[in-house]
Image (cartoon, rainbow, N blue to C red; front, side):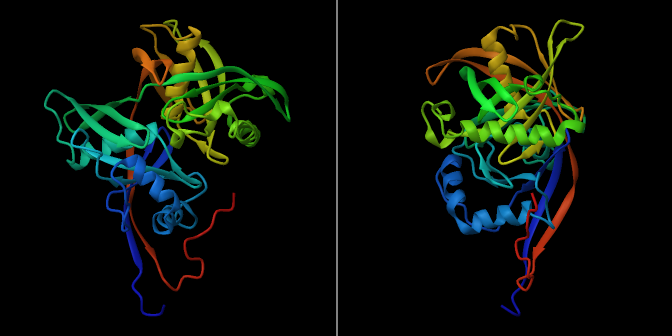
Length: 342
């Protein structure tokens, strides 16, 4: 309607290992629900919340691989804040790279006061549960961030699957979201930029072949069901200290590519490697991405969760601020909330 004022949205942007994360600290829409998990359910069907997601993901303000989060209240006083994670196709249940970015943002802005010891805990409620970040610092400088995730476990092993590139087997594991794990060499590929397009195609194929099967079901909370992404990996052997070294690309949502080694995906990978005995107590997983960034991960604890032998993964990385935005939506803009070509 002529004369209406533009909608204005302010964001702070970070990247973790090359993967973007757009933070909306004051979403200009109501997000209803008593918990973050309930707010995610609301957001999926609410046109205003989902419209804001699409506005910030879509061109010309975003792109097909954009990622971000809306800050919400925590579930209770045990956490500093909550977050709804989003990408071009919807709202995810977990996001490790986003959690790392949020911890850096919370400390840098003073939302969470720095601990004089040099290690500051940031506790965040996410749709899959409560996660803790340990921000390591030297004065004003952040030197690293540990992401301590929800209990993670292998759901299925050696699941046979027919693909356009032949018969393969995949493992399926939960790390806050459910991932299928495929050795890239099994489909004649390597996790390198020159194979980017083919990796996306295979990742999408595996996800959609498994998404409606029993293997994609979360054992206790169906809101967490569904194959969130496919992790295609190269086994690079062991590093000089005998730790497993792998490179991966995580193809999630519908063809979106994580530029980082993927936080929740790394947790899922830790669960698989621990279950097979390839990641032992005292070892770390050296986990590289398709762009050469790196996380390191370890098993912080072993326990039973949701009826499965599980581990608590700890992933270490860092995040950097890339800028601020003041986006506007002109009510007379014919392209409105934008578009995505892929």
